[in-house]
Image (cartoon, rainbow, N blue to C red; front, side, top):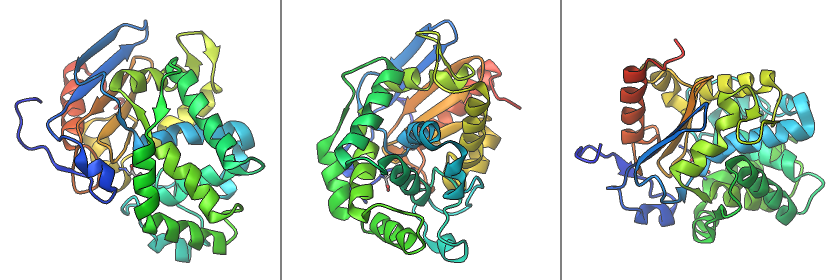
Length: 293
Ligand code: DON
């Protein structure tokens, strides 16, 4: 991967992300026994962005259960991650929890009954617990950068509020959303945080249950069908694993019963997914026979 010069393009609609060096590449794989294989820039924290939507969905399902599905759908959108068009014909209900509109609606559910600071603390502590690492933090410069420029997300949130899909003041919901997207994690931390999804909802480090096995299975299903936006079909075709990407260039992939894999390469393809990250995952799953198909 280091030798390749097709690196995609670093996201620039969040100015702070445009400053990231596209020459970086990291990978971490953690198997069922907890063995870690890691290489490259696997310990450099990067902006996880949309990958955090897996953790906010898990948290929100724990808080409100299946009531969540009254606000958000479970179908792939076939549209870009920040698209607004489907909301008009679908009563303001986002197609799934991983597109921006869906993740904003999920964030709004977590916020309800709390102050923004408390909701954000809840999300951060959950991620720290999953990764077994209290040092994980929010990159304030990235959050501020998106807060200044997130006009499209503001449009999505206001539009959903007009349909009653968002309950809280839009600025509060977006404040929490922008900040949880700005959580910074390394590949090693991310692969650790995703382990409950590979092992039937159990956190293998502690043996404690994070979610019911059925819920873990369903979150994996959503990652497979919706985790890469309008690139989800291609990711399933090439890699064959549930995965979630972020515009920071990270991907968390789950090999059920086997391992978690986190890759990071900041350059993105046209759908906003890590270009080299996807290629690395494709090579790895092919070599190891890890595709679920
Ligand atoms: O809302 C946004 O645009 C970003 N905070 C997250 C988008 C994202 O990561 C899409 N992923 N490929």
